[in-house]
Length: 287
Length: 253
Image (cartoon, chains in turn green, yellow):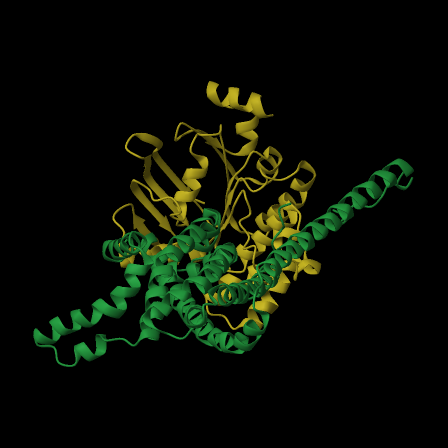
């Protein structure tokens, strides 16, 4: 029951040492080559952009204006992903529930939302909901029209959150189902209730499983948040297209907007890697 | 022995999977307090299913199970029945073939999970008790290790400590050594023997015949969902009455 494998008394033979060195240098060479290739691609990209004769001064002068749009983008994304996570958790529990009402509602929700375009949903929340409010108001519920006439940003957050919640419901459900049945049985054998088992045993393990796909959704949502520009919110991509059209400099503005989105996503990916590392405690890594 | 009321009493237990896979065919069993029962038999004979029925991890199709005075007939689930099932589960520890430790908790956290969450025992008290139990299974130095860093034998001993932390009156063992490397079986069997010597009521499904011979008060042999033979180990192992038991024993001894 030794914890580590120790070298035999003879030590590592020179041939084995050589093989290890070769393995290490092959790995190092791959990393070096990969870096060279990536730098090459970036360089070519810059060369191409220079050839296109981009108006760099113009870009510089509008950079600050674009960057202030990040605030809206981030606010919409963070609030919408939070909403989506809450919905997804409830949705997953509903999809796994043996209660016909909970199960039926969750199944219906996932099917409806996944089956319709996000673009249509955004317009539904923003443009069609007030009409529903009007109809209800006329049917005799006072004040409902005002309540259902949403400003652009809340409408966008609801649209994105509800839409991503449906996709993430399936992610959460799969994560919960991926936990071995033996975990539930061991907890049951201790006399734990269903909700205790879910909270203490299943969800903490399922969370670790769903972090990568959820991060994926988060990254996708940063970009889908540009859909709120349809409602005239001055977020990143709306600013870029507005100014680009006004000065016939769409190429410059869109390249800048794309670059800003990209940097945000790179930062998010780094954060994801950190979180996964932290969550991996106690877990044996599969190679 | 017959005068005492049995702590486990099973009557006419049937388990049918799906519509026609008849795994248990009318099982009766009485277990007295402090008795050690070993169930043997060919794989697929229904031993594990029977054990899992005892704490309702498997829902019996018909029959009655009585654990320490709580009578639960097979039947439709309901709120009161669920409560009864949780009561008997809290009285009965179960040790699994695959250990089933909680991988996101350290050894000590595994052991105190039941007392803290189910019995609402204050954490400091549970930790004190948990440390004693880990010492009892010889794993004091592993209290802060996660299960993935423990050997199979160590994991199973933590699992036993986890069950004992609930202070059960009965311990169920479902092939506790079958997933272990041969050199790790001894350390788990040794813990089980000590538990038996301390007067724990135990029902053990195992292929570990040494344990059956040395520790069991009674050995029951199951085939096709029925007992085909039962008695004290010396009798079963040396002089089985049934031809089928003789064949099975010749196979494994």
